[in-house]
Length: 71
Figure: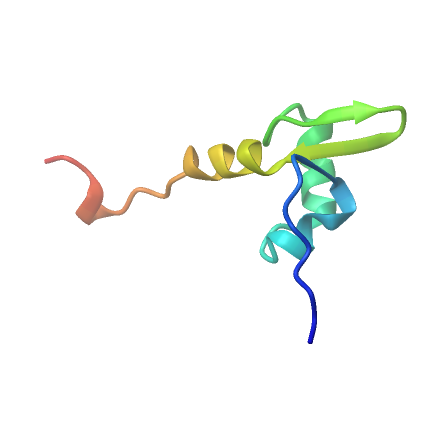
């Protein structure tokens, strides 16, 4: 049986696709370069993210449809 690793506060950028399979690490690198995307932290050359920061960023990026727009 596979053990599930508990979520820690920080995780390195290459692990993004392990937790969020729809987020490509290359895309996230491009967003960082443009100063867009979720908040991130650097420790030397290591780029770290928090789950709460990615979740908040995703929640702030809704796609509005005709049904969800006010009349």
